[in-house]
Image (tube, rainbow, N blue to C red; front, top):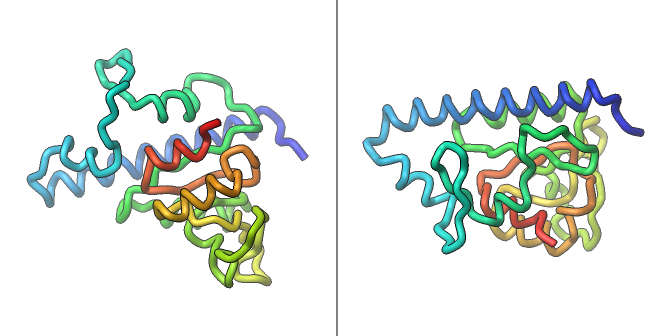
Length: 178
């Protein structure tokens, strides 16, 4: 049940475009309402690590991100799970609805643990609500504890989700280690 390469690339491009729009919207709103530096904001989501790599534009990324997230300039492969960095109040919930309801993708977000699925001992794809067409992996990747549980269940290598939404980029990248 694999997608043709054109559809995979279209899916990846739409995720990239929507992620960029959401991030830029957030930064515009946040910068206007908060006189806080972007470094202070970023430190909440990107903890400092001693081992950073230099990027072409002079930015650095922690190794966990560099080693576990794909380079968007490289071709998409079916065993990759696109990660949408969901910045709260930036339109990410609309993007989640688009991918789950309109595109019928299996998603990993906070909804997968509803209806008691936080007690499941194995990863599985569940319909939430039970008789709906929306499909989720039974993990909550919107919290640190949820990401820890997802990692323990082997989510990062299960290839069950077609897109993942998390506000914790650093912790979400760590799910794919090993």
